[in-house]
Image 1 (cartoon, one colour):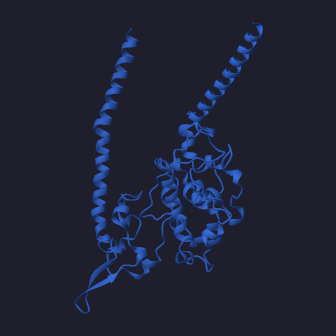
Image 2 (cartoon, helix red, strand yellow; image 1 turned 135 degrees about the vertical axis):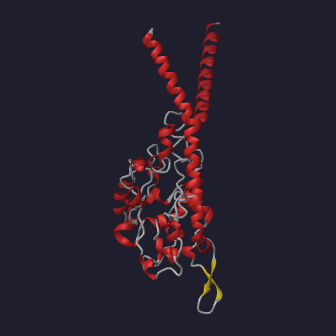
Length: 327
């Protein structure tokens, strides 16, 4: 009896502590984070008053006049996009030299080394689930790293001022496809940016994919990396981009019950919805129906009902004929 009473008291105490954490501690932490973000946003205005728009002004000490200049496109940072990005809670000088506080900026700062993702996220238990170390290994084996070396880095694809991961929470597959494909087209669809890395002529994406049936539908429904990256079961998004000769070209790779899309584009849904019925491979594709890879649960039920009705009709017909013959 005493043991039972002790357990009840313990359970009640734990429940009270849980309520206190939810009601007081969690909101306090959230408020602290919001206050910190607001404080940093105010600090960042010192940078964004110039870098947050297409033009900036400064006082020329030689002539004593105010000068207006156009801001270089690559150095313009949209306030709203940065604030909503994965890095929006940081101060500019968390990543850039504090020497940028002076104007004009010292010329040597142009040579400043940029952090890579692994510099901050590597070896950090808070980010262990994202497996940045494994992503780094994958990336180093990719055609981007092997062909371009240090000229190519994380920021060529993931702009640190705007990047926002959405694949783990967004249920709109086509929005994810459009967002991720825009990352690839940022270089492969822009000859100026493409030739920052190579003197080769940027291939016409449309012409290079003329062999692909229903080309426009494919571009809207799947990401470039579905066909151009090696699948890795242990990380969420593949980073080992393959040479064009190794790109997927066989329709059956996607249009089959063992569709590679289940290990790439729809991978994040497979685990969440494996227990639900309705489609092959244990995943429901809300906005994507892949011929040969999935089927509709309700159409399956309807077909069974129709089959049952036909079978019942045949049996009834046979029974009536037997009865009629006996008469």
